[in-house]
Image 1 (cartoon, rainbow, N blue to C red):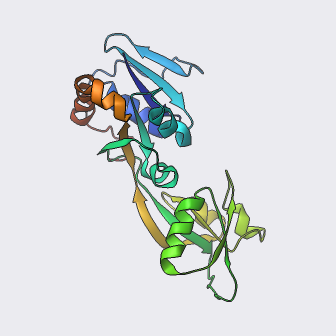
Image 2 (cartoon, rainbow, N blue to C red):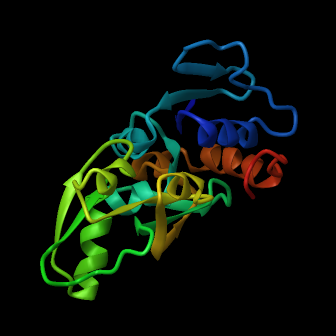
Image 3 (spheres, helix red, strand yellow):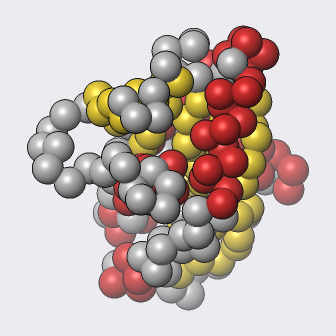
Length: 211
């Protein structure tokens, strides 16, 4: 049986739809809060995990393959194979600041972020001294309350930023859903994994999925 780690939420639902093939054999409908699902017809087991944990399950061999955002892969650098850009879940990693903000450069820049590695690497390339403040939710609140000067976070439409008086001032990189594989699994189960991948690539994204 092939084990697949899927991120909870919209990205996982989109991936499961693609993996289900044209008939959508396995869905989240009617599954309640179950975290392990089995598609016996295809001999596939799915695990639903926190998006930031997907690559950990794959790296340690608990899952043979998984779906992770490029943002997670660049932040955590797991020892896995990155097989395909699946083309959905598109967004940007960006620096955002209060509207009209300008960097005075007379002190370390205070950055609130869930992605400290990505933030440090970006500003190291610019030669800008920074102080990172790691948060795990609602990073938009930090500059509003004076905890940080700016934030580094994922931006999709920018609506949350605008509603909180922030704007993206710099794009760092583009992110989308990536298919990853455990290195040992891909060596010993390659034919089975490739069959699952082929089914995904042949199934078009629905209208509700960013393609």
